[in-house]
Image 1 (cartoon, rainbow, N blue to C red):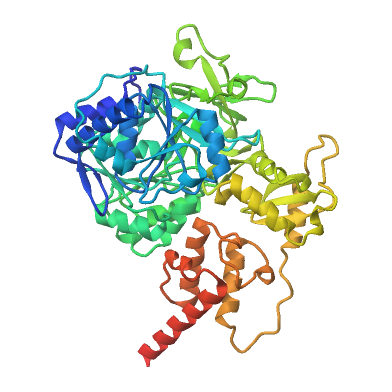
Image 2 (tube, rainbow, N blue to C red; image 1 turned 120 degrees about the vertical axis):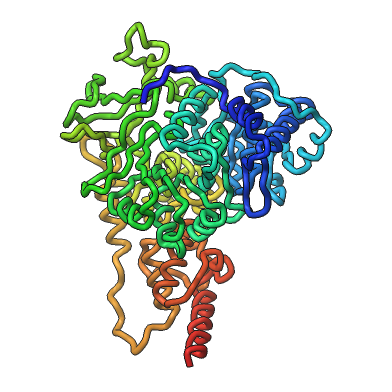
Length: 610
C-alpha cells in the first residue's frame, strides 16, 4: 500500500466527520451514548475551559486519569484541540512514580474522570475533576478551533520503563499519530457501521488508536464501562452488547478472553489485533478457530515507532513462530549487524531491527542523551528521502528473515522484558529495590514467566525478620503492581560471567528453580480438602511452591496481579465445576475465605442435585 505523505491533524479529521455525520453515535458504553456532534461540541468547550481558566498552554503536558468510559476519548480530543499534550496515568500509579512522571514531563494539572478523587491526596499536582470542568465549561463556545501547534508537536506522551531506573516518556507527534491512525483504518477497512472496542489500558500506547482512529472514518468506539479491572468476561460481554467489530489485545489477555464463556458467540468481530508480547501460533490457531469470521493479526511495534510498525494476518499454516509482517506506510525496516552496518531484509539475514520513517516518535521527553543514543542518523538515507527517512530508531529487538522473506522477532539485545504486554526494563526494577537502602546488590530477571529478584542484603539488614516486607513496601511505592517481583531470593553474592562481569542469569534461573522445587508430596488422603486444592492451583498460577503460601494472607500480598486473578478464577471454576467470577476474588480474598465459598457452592449444588 503506497500513498503520498501528507500528514494531517487527527482531531481535525474527527471534526470533519462530526460535520458529515453529526447525529451518528461516536462513543458508547453501557450507560451512555455520545453522538459525533455532541462529542465535538463538548470537546471544544472543555478545550476552551482548560485554556481560559486553567491557563493550559500549547504543548503543555496534562496528566489524565480516566475510567473505561466515553470521557476518555473526549478528554484526548479536547487536549488535542487546545494544543496540549495528553499524558495518561494509571489509576494504581504509585505516588513516587507519579511525581517522577510529572517532573519529567512538566505536568502541573491532573485531569481525572474517576468517580472519586483518587490520587489527589498523594500528589502535589492540581487535581481537576472532569465532571466539574464540564459543568464550568457549559456556557463556553462550542465551535472548532484553529490548530495551535505544528504537526511535529507532541500529541501524547507514553511513559515506559527506563533502563536508567527512571520512567521514560516517549513523545509522539500529531503527524506520526496520523500516519498510524490513517494506516490502521485503511489496513482493517474501518468505516461507518463498525465498532471498535476500547479494551487496552490507557497507559499502553495501542489505546491511542482505539481512542481516535475510528472517529476519523465514522465508526463507533465502545467502552467497557466503570473503573473495574479489565477481565475476559467483561470484554466478551461488551463485544456482545455493542456488537463490536474490531479490538486490540495482548496474547495474555487474549488467552483469557478465549476461555471466557460466550466468546464463540461473538460473531460480530471482524478483526483482532494482537501484540505487545510474543504471539504463539497455537494461540493464533485457537483464536481463528473460535472466531472463524474474524481476521487475526500479529502486530509489532515499539512505542517509539508509534503503536504498530508492522502487521501480519494469520494464515492458518503450521509454523514455529508468527511473522511480524511488512512495515506500515511511510516506514522502512532495516537489520543492523554487530559492527553497526545497516542492511535490507535479505532472506536468512539476522540482526537488530531498526525503523525509519513517518512512524518515529520525536524522542524521549527532556532526555537528549537517551534520544541521541536510540534515534541515530540513518546511514541508508538518500538526498531525495532524507526529510522522511533521515532518522533511524534502534529497537533492541533481534529479528531474522526466513527463507521466504518473512521477518520474525527472535530475542532482545538488552535486559528489557515484557510483562502482561507492558515493556519493563529490569534496571528500573533493580533501582527501585536498591532505593530501600537494604541491599548491597540485586539482579532482577525472568524465571520462566515470573519476574523475580536475587538479593544481596547489606550487612545486618536481614537481622530484622521483616526486612523483606520493608523491601517490598519500598518497591511498591515506586513500581506498578505488575512490575513487582513475584519471588525474592537472598544470596551471599550475585554470580557473574567471567569475561563480561555481567550477572549470570542462567545460574540465577537455576537457583530460583531449585528454590521453587515442590516439597515431596504427602501420602494421599481419601479426599483432598478444598483449601489444599485451591492452594495447589494458586501455587501453579503464581509459579511458586504451594508449601510457601500463607493461607490467611490476601491474594494481592501473595503476588497475584490482575491477570493472575482472572487466570486463577478460571482455574478454580474448572477444577471444582462451579462458576466463579474474577471480581469475586476481591470478596473471597484469601485461601481460607475462598475455600469456604467453594465448599458452600459445592454443598448447594449437591443439594439441588439430590
